Length: 312
Image (cartoon, rainbow, N blue to C red):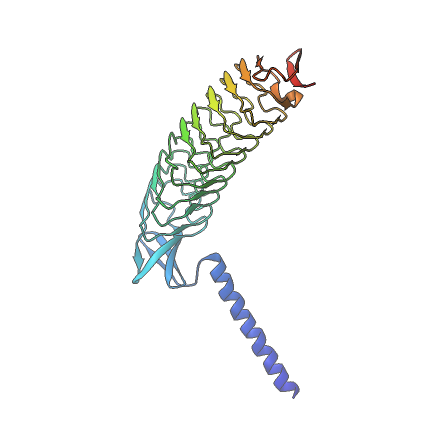
């Protein structure tokens, strides 16, 4: 009886080990069945293939649409991480998923076309692709995630008209980005979306936006004017160091300006508003107050380089 129990125990442990290995392979998106073609490694998973590795010396890559009669549907996580020699890549329409950090640190990658069936640009996908100048998003891309295009220093423009959600730092440190149209239907501009985009001169914000998160435009030195939708709060450091911002009209819906929102906006001279604000919100500005509601009594005080106002 004990021998039988021992056999069952060993068999159960064996099955558990096999199941764990299968689960691990599934979660990582790769299997033990790999093929290397023209310097690119393809790993089989669930009846299709994903790109999992590459030859470091390659500067041009064309991903296959099929391997052994099976579709190539995915570029794996960090598949081309640090591919500093890579300049051009062709992604076939069979690809439906591009993994986290797939092209992180591809410093010389100059252009990319995202296939139509890809639905999101995942975290860190093109992080610090310094020379990425041209990006064409597929018509079904709906989400651009955290740090997706962070540090793409040569990127001057991108059409995001199909996108319905942006996440934090998605276009931060894109120092040549000049103009951006936020699609109608977007409700939230996330934290630090355009932080340190020093060439950004114009951002079109639709009426659908009801939240502009902290530091969203922090360090946008070339931004001279902006039209705000019906938001209720301007969070801390939203326009911090927007040194060329000269005037702004704040909507009647606005109830609060938080710490440092317009701090070090050295060119800011004219603001129309009627609300309470944190004393540090207007630090280091040359602001003039225009009161649109005469029934509100406002106090306006200056002390050295600090200026603030609040309802009394």
